[in-house]
Image 1 (cartoon, one colour):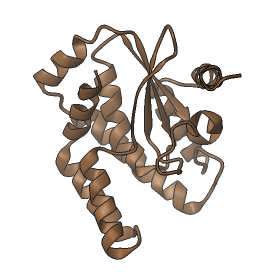
Image 2: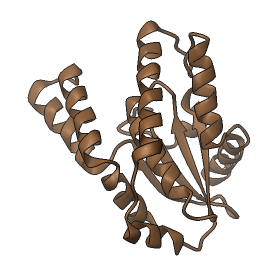
Image 3: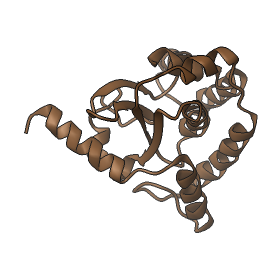
Image 4: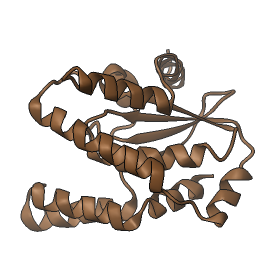
Amino acid sequence: MDTTTVLNTEITDALQKSMTYQDFLDKVTTLHEEGKVTGDTQSEDLLNYTNLNLRRLKRWNKTLKVSDDVKETIANYSKKVHWIVVAEGWCGDVAHILPVIHKAAELNDNINLRIVLRDQNVAFMDHFLTNGARSIPKLVMVDQETLEVLHVWGERPAPAIKLIKDYKEEHGIVDETVKEELQHWYNSDKGQTTLKELTALL
């Protein structure tokens, strides 16, 4: 099979295994209550991250604001698309970004938001690596009729990518210090840069 046929097959498979935003929240919550996390790796650290992320997700679901300009841009988008987001419940970036993507998708019935777990969809994920890594979240915008990939976004908004890149260049590592800086950036930005970058794709 050619590359396009393979990708279309894997997109179809990913969609069949995908879930709604609410299903994702429910799954992460249920697993956490059982002392488990999404994905192939189970650890106390990932469980702690998941606990923190559930609080973040809940907070963003309540507090995220969308400007009238962004609402209008998204509402006027006429192409029918799937927004397939590759995620895991323990990922900090997912907790800050996925609620923003969800809020945007809610503004237009032409956007069908579906969440897939990275470790259950490796073949699909491997088409959308970041510098060779399976970085998440990754948003893949797909035409609903043709399954053509229209845009790929992620794993972070541009300023957040720069923050991590600059720190790594200076210190040689990504440690807890810069991870805290990243959390502060997300909290101060309030999802607005992500919304702008998403609307730029439309």
